[in-house]
Image (cartoon, rainbow, N blue to C red; front, top):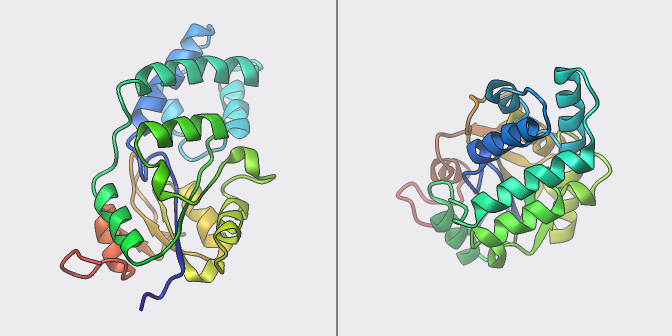
Length: 220
């Protein structure tokens, strides 16, 4: 019998390989709006919710950035790229099938807004796996606050301490840790400190083995 009642995943950089793509289109969106923002700076915004992202970009360029205008352009550019499909991170399909085989419900807790989150999940072919998707639009305090994971656990009818969270970023790991979940951090573009994770793993499958969601030889 598994030690857990539910599993909650971050989206970008954890389930889907979109961080680099979204960073590139974010830089392009800034350029299209006449703002000089380099890729290196944009990469520092990993895991940060959209309102804070806009605030940091505004401070970086020294001028106010209109939230709606920026995200309309960024979403447009991302949608063009998503037409070719959204690539999954290694091991996603195998892991989701193994978790489903154990009868554990799954949810997504993401800092993305609902529209883009839904678009990415559908484009990646993942919609059928998740009973609930908690987005930036569903909470009053986004990651690194614990609310996204607390809400996801509540919607699954699970106690947070009986849930596993999979995250890539420090911001997301901090959110899940503060909510009381067992945290597996699989770094994407940035190395993990391990400060907020119970397990840091190079891949999703190795992280799943570390918490007992997969056996040592890979099966459920």
